[in-house]
Amino acid sequence: MCGYGCGYADPRAMRSDFVAPIKVAHPDLRQICWIGLMCLCPLNNVLCGFNSLLCIFNTCCLLPVKTQSLIAFGLAMKSFGTTPQQLGKRRYSHRDDVVASHLIEQRHTYPSCTVQCQVRSVSTQLEGLCPLRKAVKKDDFLRLRFNFKVPVLQWAGSFSHSEWGRLETYIPPYGWKGLPQDIVRSTLALLNDSSSSRLFERRWPDQCVRCAVVGNGGILRGSKQGRAIDSHHFVFRVNGAITKHFEEDVGTKTSFYGFTTNTMKNSLNSYRKDGFTKVPRGQRVRYIFIPSNERDYVMMSAAIQGLTVTSGHDKGDWPSRYFGFKPPVKHFKMLHPDFVTYVTQRFLKSPLLKYSQLYMPSTGALMLLTALHMCDQVSAYGFITKNFADFSDHYYDAVMLPLRFYANHDMQMESWLWEVLHARKVMSLYKRTKVK
Image (cartoon, rainbow, N blue to C red; front, side, top):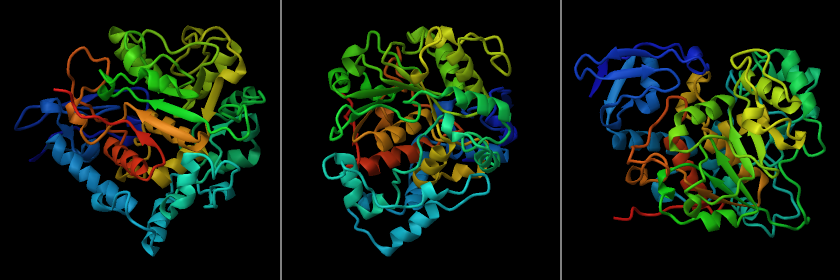
């Protein structure tokens, strides 16, 4: 049943950090739609349209989660060019060339791929030894999507006048449009450590680096996966990454913490009562900023220099309260706009791309895709699976809470992507049935 009544929200405002919710009673059910960074109807965890898409059209479509999941699942399959029956089984055909071309089609709000973005065969000394690239090399379907030549990180060498001219056309996180040039230039200039362009150093040239990416899904509660997670060379965590009191299920190691300034602060506010009182710290922890807007450049710059934030939304904030006082430059990383564009176009080309100022892949998705391009063996824990409704939203929820879907992410498409990559042996997705 669909009813009109959700207030209109300008998508240009919905990606901003200033959230001005609009609430309008549904004429029949008298439910409330909140429009801001999320648009969620509270009745039985009902979504406002397909991932709140219809809210943008002044429409609130009240559909059960299961029905919406099926709709989104079908749209995701259509975009990726396969069906559940073909999942992990289908052989390469000319159809894949067509699908791949569709996936990397340039949109006016995204930068066209540079020469680094063109499809190339995977060439690495480890391709015959390590599971991830070995799987990509053998699978034509995957080889059309993975490109390990795209720069993952920004650093001092990423800025030039020509790059500014190219990327200032596209909005963050896909470019630098609307950002002050001096802020981008000065922030990237600080990333001048010899390791700034690399996520980690390999101890041995022939080492297969094993990475665990830990989401915060309720599937991890009672999983006893902590030891398995900590056994990896590197562990990625995101947003409300609580480990205290949950060590047996999620481990203790943190190598990389991924976030935007907005998601970090929202997590500290929203999950403080659950135990998330500070972001991970330590000499071995590296911070991966997702450049979603000016706030991320300004916050990183102040953190590296040991200063307060001097402008913008976070003016007066003291980054040392999050990262410690003036950590070494090597502790800070920032994703490259070209990488965010590439993974969005190749892997997560959601229908929500029509609203480019609203949609972007989730923090967890970007960290998992980062690991898939930097590590040699990847395991994903705490990510959405087909039976997500059996578990609470987060592993640290005190009571059972249904998974919430947000207007600026396409969680169903992300879920489907993880299933595809798991089936094709590119990564291992942790799954389990609910213990009764």
